[in-house]
Image (cartoon, rainbow, N blue to C red; front, side):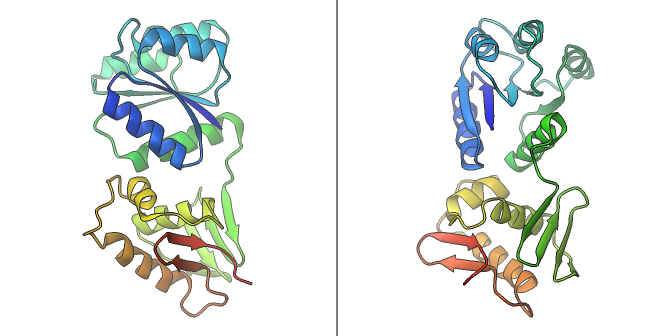
Length: 224
């Protein structure tokens, strides 16, 4: 899926592009409203993320231009402005959601996926690997029919692994997607979380689904 990000803050724009690309999306990044409007009209996107306060044209005018051109992709406003009137104005102009800075990337990613599911129905509601099932809508995990209780972070971690099943995910990617932080080699939070998740998902079940790839990261797959 292809996403347009219109964000003039260099650090935020680069952070969004990297995080969304690591999550499996194709991302175009515009640094001002004019470029954002041009891309939004001339290209096909599954979703757009717009800042409100932009050079040249503000996010509201970009949204108006996109809608006037007949483009109906979902639009998420991302802005530091938290006034009720601002949120109402954006929604009345045709925005689909509104997220206020500072934000956790995990929340933004969840909202993006929700909008994509609502817009085109391409996102599955159920992820399955072998006898392991993750129900995104009901936030429920079962293995071999047995209910498994996970914390919010464990659920996000398992969801990420299952969406990228068979792919070795480095610790840096996991840190940015689940904990919304840069990976620090002195921090063992990922190892601890993976150990707890593996105990819940794999202990007492066969085959083992979560595997550590030494020096590379972690992967979920059905072994041979």
